[in-house]
Each structure stands twice: as structure tokens, then as C-alpha cells.
Length: 287
Image (cartoon, rainbow, N blue to C red; front, top):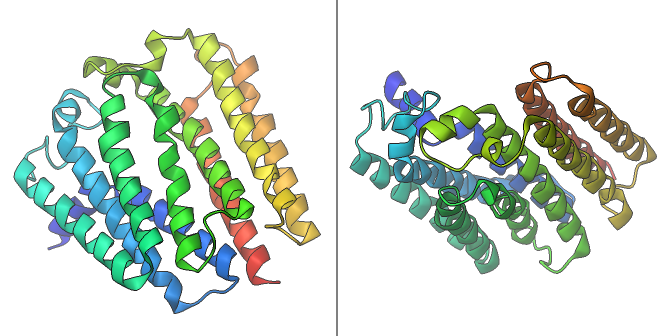
């Protein structure tokens, strides 16, 4: 049972899916201003959809996964799960997630959830085989879960506060995906997928990475301008975090070849996003 659970968590990329769940909860909190059990409904719905979408992605990319060292031990290429079993699990999770959103929230939240699945598995997964720049349209995926939480709490989809929140998640998602591709560029080449390293030189990649990370920090500083943050201390914290991220990302510009770790930058930008979410949610709850 423990091994089966471990395989399921790996198949559904549970850690990544959990972040989508967290961003859904943040969207709900910011729209409602409260922390209630009702938050669990859209959060669970998105968790199931995200797990199902990730499982479907592993089914779709099973041949590429088998060719890459990083992914050869995943459930499908390693033989622990048959392809048809993964497809069945994926469709079941997507069905359950959609059902939770449809009956537990509202039609708009349900449609946004399905849009996220379609965009990830139908658009982004396809574009990954065609262009190394699939990360840019693919980043739209990150902006949808907080929107689901927002509208599930009764917020308007046209509210500028939601759009600036979604914009932050969109911008953050680009360097998140971008750095992941840079970390495993050789694996992608081995599998025959387009890679950024084949388009840009190493110095160019460092400069572009800095621009995207700095843009993430700037997108975060837009959030207080739209009234999502009221406490001066939280505003100050967001400014300090933005300066910290830009300062650390500047290392990409001065590092000599082989001296800069894209893995370190990947961890930093994800920690940054997590702390930002915690700060703005605490600000909303303490008003």
C-alpha cells in the first residue's frame, strides 16, 4: 500500500500540484477575506485536476521520459505503471476534480479549471515538442488556479485585483519553467526536444534569466498598487523580498561560465513566490 501511494504521488507530481492548490487557496482568501472550510472545496477540486493533468502529461510524454536520464525512473518508463493504467488514473482524477468544482463552486470556476487542464495538456505539452519557447504561453497555467479560488469565493473575474495577482503568477511561471529547462537541457536534447541551449549561448541565457527573474520581482510590486495589500509592514516586506531576489539574480550577470547554478536560482524564485503568497494572505486575513 505504501509503495502504491508513493507511485501515485510520483505519477501525479503531487508537490507541484500542491502549489497550484495553495495558489487557489490564496485567491479564495484574497477575494473573501476569510479562512473557512468552504475554501477546501475549490482547493480540493484544483488539487484533483492538477494531479490528473500531471498524470496525463506523464502518459503523453512517456516516450520522451524513457529517453531522459532525469525521468527514466518515473512510474511509466520504469514499468511500475502501465500506460493504460496511467491514462485511466488521469481521466478519473480529472473527472473527480471537475465534479468537485461543478457541484461545489460555480460554473465559472469549473470552466477555468477545465481551461487549465486543456492549456497544460493540449497546448503547452504540444508546444514543448515544437519550440523551446513553449514556456511563455505555457506560463498562463500558473495564473488560472488563483482565479479559480477568486471566483469560487464570489469575486468578479473582471476585478483588476485578480488580474494583477494572475499577472504575478504568469510572470513567475516563465522563469520557473525556464530555469527547469536550463537545468536539464542535455536531457531534453537527448530526447529530441527543442532546448534553449540550442538557441542561445550561455552568457545570453544568464542575461535573459536575470531579466525574467527581475520582472517577477517587479510584477510583485504591482500588487500593493491595486489595493491587495494594506499594511505598511507587508508592503515593506514585499519591497525587501523584491530587492533580495533582484540582488541574488544579478549573480547571473557577473558569474563566470560554470560558476552559476541555475538550480540555486530555481529554488530561490520558488521560495520567493511562496513567501509572497504567505505575506499577502496574512495581510488580507488580519484586516
